Length: 407
Image 1 (tube, rainbow, N blue to C red):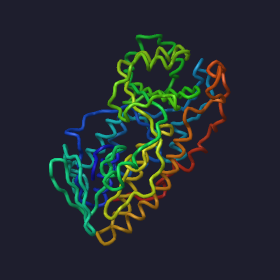
Image 2 (spheres, rainbow, N blue to C red):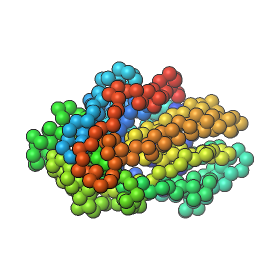
Image 3 (tube, rainbow, N blue to C red):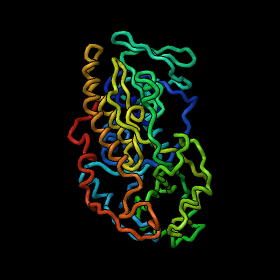
Image 4 (cartoon, rainbow, N blue to C red):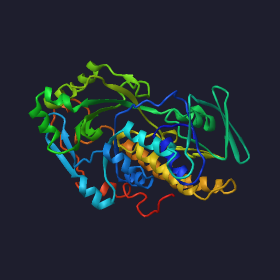
């Protein structure tokens, strides 16, 4: 495995359950608890249960009861969809909000714990992969320190800036079309009492919810994570007029610039956004789906092969799906049957992730019956119709429902 992020850790768990010996190479010297909130729809939580990690993650998870859409100027409710028990009853799996660090820690533990089934995965840190050689049915990677690792299979799960993808297909294939900027912050719930608490309660609601504020070209989304200890807040600014920054969540945003994007918005939301001490930002890039993920005994997974816009909140879920299906096709595989197993993996996963990529790219600041133009920001707008049931997700959330566990 190359990469120990969410996709890499999930794949290490999946391949361990499938009975394989796994070595994970990670370029970072150590894995610090980084990131913010992640939405885990039933297609992800169902697989986490099969990975036997749901029980460990549950104490850190929060179940949203509703998805609420609000108008940016005055908070008028534009639409609402039930979640919570309604999702669990329909899909036999929950919808969770978690902190990325909690999900990551649970997956890493399941992959590397000596107490788990099969052989524990081995993690090597400070191991940046800079070379790849394929000979027959085996592949070898070389790190920047000159270390060599050989295996029957090499899986590239090293993220949107994947070195392995560049080694397989060339670096130019990773270029994307700039579409805007995303901002995110974590607000400690304890800080809510320092502001107009009653006003915050008006927009946060009586129970945990995903709340999405819609304006032409800008979305603002907030929901609780870490069992309600933090409010995760994200602002997505779309359009060619936005100046995308480096594609990394490590850059701290200009706070005044961030708050300036909320000029004219509902004062309650502005006051809420002002409680964030630190805001991070990243460029948003749209990419066409790759034509292939596999070359010989090497394959890609997760953001390395299907990075997607954040509008459907499916990035982590699709990486988890990749990991699960790869484990399934490799359950009884050996070097002689590996080519067929990898072909089946690509045939199953590439069309599905391409569909999610395209769906995520379609929704770029849309959601109101108005578009940027003269005086557009001053018009109240009319919400585009969105079903209150789960019909938009019937093709997405049931994934893996009728399949047996890996091991």
